[in-house]
Image 1: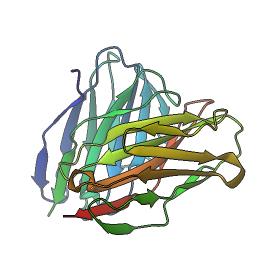
Image 2: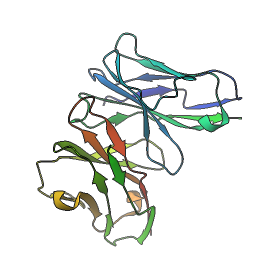
Image 3: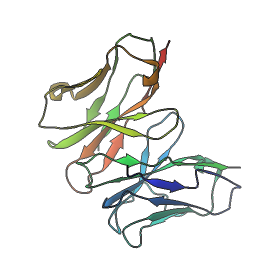
Amino acid sequence: EAEVAQSPRYKITEKSQAVAFWCDPISGHATLYWYRQILGQGPELLVQFQDESVVDDSQLPKDRFSAERLKGVDSTLKIQPAELGDSAMYLCASSRLAGKNEQFFGPGTRLTVL
Amino acid sequence: AQKVTQAQTEISVVEKEDVTLDCVYETRDTTYYLFWYKQPPSGELVFLIRRNSFDEQNEISGRYSWNFQKSTSSFNFTITASQVVDSAVYFCALSEARGAGKSTFGDGTTLTVKP
């Protein structure tokens, strides 16, 4: 069964350092999402791609976060510099079409900023 | 702007009890999609069901059932004869049918089923 892959699963870093997360969506899924999930809350959309184009990054802190999906397949989310408040679970999801179709989630990356 | 409210933060039941998880949403759109996802302790969200705004038929899948009422903007989820394996965080989500198809999630309800 096809799955969304994410790495690393866990990341511990010190504040002001740079971190990067990688996601490989299910083959054929045009839409890719990056979410941040704080303990006790629901996923919050950071950025949404349709193929290689960003279609929504309204909640992405652009002064420190960046995301790319160069060939419309896998994607990287970067934080530079990391801050204490960035500690959270970062989830990647993909779907065939945005809105209508269900999203398939990866296992997430647990980030701890010390 | 869209909003999804899951007022029940935590629910605890004893095995075999029935339990209903509430979801209330806000949107100005006439066409939209509603979803339920399950997040077990392992952490990975799993899709359970999708409903579009034009289909108010209730749905039953085994021990799970969903009640969609457009008049009250609610999409509630009932588990009949709960089991320990149902223990998880359950999220209700709303997606736009237009534009980028943006999704908004509720804050989830943590369900604990005790043996």
